[in-house]
Length: 439
Image (cartoon, rainbow, N blue to C red; front, top):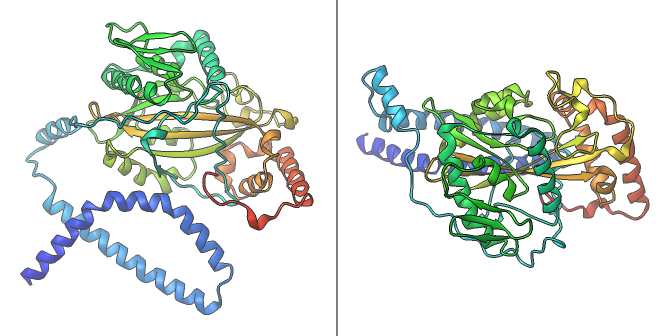
């Protein structure tokens, strides 16, 4: 009996050590599995349905038993004894983050990168169906920051936004200052290596060769908020989530200049869960909260990830969609928006987000790169009108409400259906549509 228990304990420890990998694998693979299952079940016989159902029931029982055993093992073998509440609070405080030794790999120069000719990557992160998932994927370090020939346009719009309303768009809490400077140091090393024709590392900081800007990140006090400097170096918006003593992660630093639909001032200081619930993110509590919070706690410094999302916007400003209300209004949202009537103003808005942990501060950095394409241009690409129309029709009620579908569905779906039929009439073969995500 003792020998059997020892073996069980050994295997549980191995399972626990691999749990991070399993969670990430499940999160990145669940969508593919769902799509395969739907295609298979469409052709399954009644007998196969019964066998599948029986298999699922057995699998669920095995998973539930395994999870309970792992939880028992953790509770008994990993949790340190805490004598009283004051000791627990002291222990939590010390356990917020311990700096680790890690150097971000130096990337090779981006092949043939040119500020005039390198086009934006054509992310089209939508499918014929729609499911609410975290949608994270492993990220190669060399792909951390993506720049292209729209850099001047993005940079100019950021400068305009900072001049118009800078204090409302950028902020760094005192306890996140070191993390923001750490991010600047990371950019100082990484950007000149990846984009040597755009950036030059200096003794005190980094220069932008094209814009002529020179940033001193060593002087104290800094002339600008460190997050502002960081955001001016790239096309992305930036945010840093800092670990708290309660185990949650809080938005403590950000430069959000081109968000379109949300304001940094509304979210600053909030924990991860409240950021999403206050924004009415669909199915967050039911499907995302537990896995997302667990992912943040477990995230390693050497395991960056990325994800993509998409929206539709009824006007043409990259910085702020006035269609949902004035930026300083207390009543912003799709409820305040007028119904779209001009397809030429409709834009496909997609975000590529990356997440990585900073080794010294433990902060988790979000980069948020927006891709902004007129819908009339997007619809010229093969397969996309039909796929986007199907994806929109697959939105559940809560997703449709979150994305403002009611305000533009009529003209958008009519347009996409017509373009899809035109492509079919011109010989488009649906069986040859690519299925690599995010396309």
